[in-house]
Length: 173
Image (cartoon, rainbow, N blue to C red; front, side, top):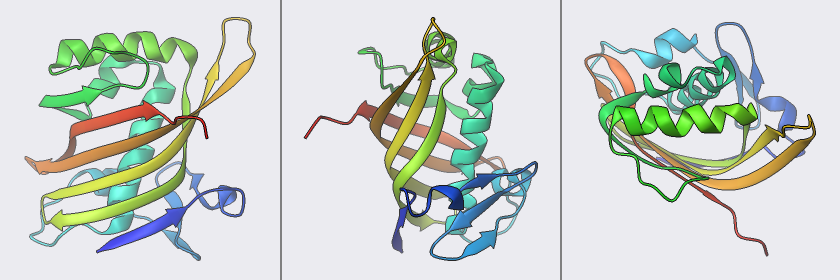
């Protein structure tokens, strides 16, 4: 089932990060399971939309560590990354680490603006939409970058991993 989630001005406060989980908005506030339970699964049931949404929170928290290896740990070994600020397609861990090593220098903080979640089956899901990054420039000033994104997740060995991630700057107009 596909649902549209808006996290714009009216719902900006609805996506609140907490120590172990996040508040998630679909018009009301619902407490998600902790990030750890969103990441691993041992049931034969499909994931919930909330669990898939929490995987972005996990990724965004990994960005906040500034550790490119920690971010790369969220990607499958055979993942494909089409990154926002690089023309090079990354298809292995070394390439993904290299991209994030440079991207993390700007201390990116992502915020979902609009999302669509598709639960494909019990081991596959897609989260796609628009997000905005706040980047810190070398002089300390901030820049905002609006981008489109798609995360394709697969449950492997009990852990949800990113198998495909596309991010591109949103064209003007």
